[in-house]
Amino acid sequence: MTPVARPDEGLNAAVAAELRAERAAKDLTTKELSALAGIPYASLRRYLGAERHIDVATVAALCGALGLEAGELVARASDRLERARRSDGDDVPTLGQRRRQRSYPILDDEAARDPHAVTDDE
Image 1: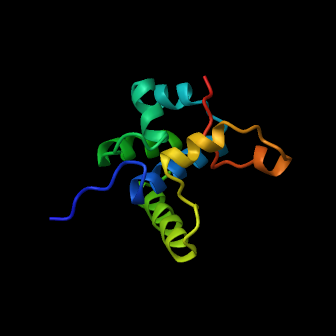
Image 2: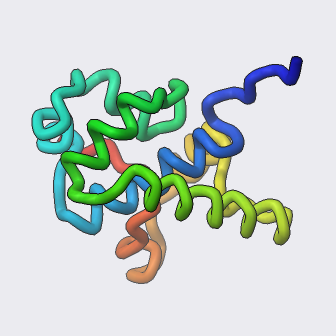
């Protein structure tokens, strides 16, 4: 049996990144998405931060709240993961990488518009 990846790695991290991007594209706060999806705010923050594994029912609830098909979101996450694997880059950063990124101010406008950035909005 293959061990389950940490939540901040692999497909789970890529799904979390796509959910963050969709939330930002829809101009929703995490609290608003929490209410729309019927998921407790603290749990949603952990899902979006790739600190917790996202189950299928949760993906379905979040996709419903965001107005997209779960299959579409997972396909985009798979594409993101494949790009990261091909480039050996940090397209899907681990939690530790994101925490280090948060400790530095955003230095340019392009980074400020990045819908994939993790934010701690209220």
